Length: 389
Ligand code: NZQ
Ligand code: ZN
Image 1 (spheres, rainbow, N blue to C red):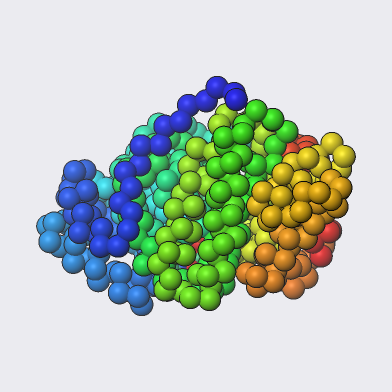
Image 2 (image 1 turned 30 degrees about the vertical axis):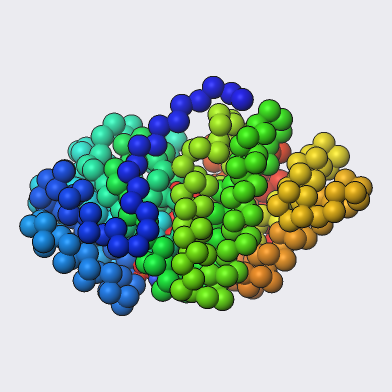
């Protein structure tokens, strides 16, 4: 293993009926809270009222910012920064999925600087040295934003969707109540499952060979998603399924499975250009891309990893020849995304057009070739996009 630092001190309240601890946790940071949320799901499922009750009983002063979009926009971040500065906010409470949490992270950081929040992104990004404290209540198992240092923001003016990692963005406290995901649609449940799978696959497919313990952990997480995502889709109120997916989402990306692996992620940079240009759901883009990227990477030098994946995650018979097992492992991945989860299988089905491939590939490689499991040039990215048509 390479050397690494693992430092994820987010305090997690997991399970039902934990929201009673919300006021106690928030008041550690002060009394003035900015409550952020998305397009209204929390009002429809009753969570908003529960949160307000908790905040009032803790005698918090409540400020609100709603309407944070899926693929959250920098304009929403700017609105939040303005409220934080004008109202002297002490702590931010994000209630929602990855989009709400991500946007809130950059509001919290933006509140501590004079420059515009978009300057946190891109090749000449400004440092993030401080952020106001962030508390989250997660409502969708997918991104892991509740327990990681990252966030991804879209800028409609520049056509960019850019990610940023920084330790101050890590939530101080996260509430993970699986029952809050009962109202997530079948489609969003499926997209969330694809996103969790992808976070693991991006790390698991690696040429480093001395990571047995981490590979076992990752295979366990992948099997968890393969087992429980279909259950959650069929039985939205199945606690066991929702709980397993929720905890898997956090552990897929909180840094634990990395173990100092230094290879870049591959499908995520390719996907972010899809959601930047077409505003599609992140997990859907990943589901379409991942099996094609796998096919592109499979050759005699990489076959062993596919064999390990196929045998240990999908239970493929290990007695067959390596290439047969590897190809079957990709077929199983496709079956899982497109048949079991019911997601669209091609770009054509979701309106993504080939005339944009060059531009998207150029942007996906804006920092140079993608040095992942296999190094991808701009031309490679175009070829993979074409395989998705
Ligand atoms: O906006 P509301 O009305 O709340 O509805 C949302 C939204 O329409 C709905 N939803 C969420 N919880 C619900 C619910 N509907 C019913 N019941 C509930 N309990 O689901 C829709 C999608 O929500 P969103 O937050 O956009 O989904 P997700 O959690 O998948 O977040 C996606 C964003 O996170 C970024 C993605 O790129 C994308 O912008 N990512 C963030 C990462 C990170 N912070 O580390 C890593 C990821 O790879 C990813 O890039
Ligand atoms: Zn993702």
